[in-house]
Length: 205
Image (cartoon, rainbow, N blue to C red):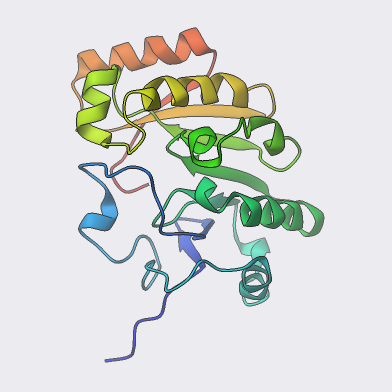
């Protein structure tokens, strides 16, 4: 059996995903990394260290970016935990490739970084996809288990409201089969009030 290798870049469907960190302020009950080492066409998404920007660039040298439809910051951690490298990488992508760039996030980047990071996304990120997960704070705390506690739910809603000022598209998501149809309708109402898109996504996406 060949030795498993950690990966910075990996393919999911026809998109190129970037795995920058394993740090995350949440411990979601349904999190994929509780059950698997990999997602999509990866080998192992557990990192022995957070890659530097130079290491990310080296990884890009080994793939043909033209083969992919979109580039997505999403791995076995919250991408905004590595926000400096994320921004450097996004700028590199925008300078060198004509590709749409997305962040899949839990929406707690402002709490993680201690400031409003939304303005820093302008010109670098095309789509922000935020995991809403539930329509109310109490259930959110049970399911997502964020280390920041009760301020987390409001923080992700505030981040969605801010992000739409600086990126082309903001999407808030729930995972199919994890909440009731009634709660999905409540989530849709939240997104409508915020002026963002609501999406019910498959478990593995």
